[in-house]
Length: 165
Image (cartoon, rainbow, N blue to C red; front, side, top):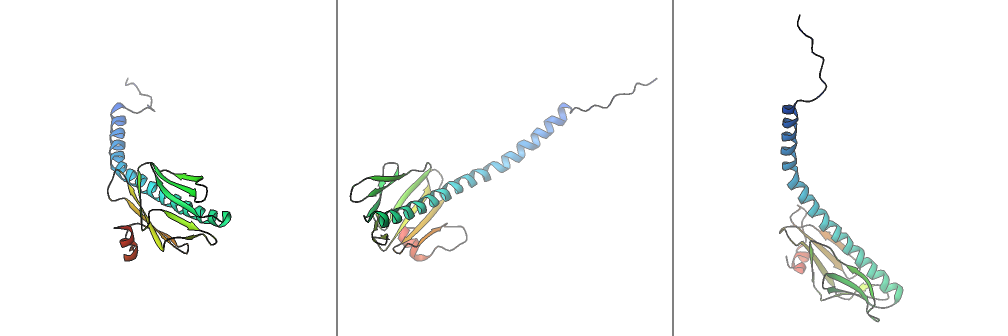
């Protein structure tokens, strides 16, 4: 009389190996896209932090009735009270290099917190991968805009020339 096998609820070794191979292929396809997404998000976060820093500098110039300066430091930028040289805020971002164009420093003057120069540009580049860049345009009257070169949206010629792109 033939034996009746009980139904097995476990996976065989071959089924498990095939599932792992398919998973490895999917991960190898998705990993570069995920790395690009992380780089892009780091630059976007750095741009947002810069806009926050300049808005804070503008508000502090109005509140304190003193000029507020943003200057380059070893690892990023510092925001200083121009009269006392007190450090109000420091900005550092790993993997992002920052270059200021249009001025050696950003200086916000009271009573309206306006930018001392007519306009300036902060260029953010990913330090290890070329082609990842954000351009932050700052106008005297408080205009702030982030541009992403190569994203399909046009970067105005004025901003390109100011940022040295």
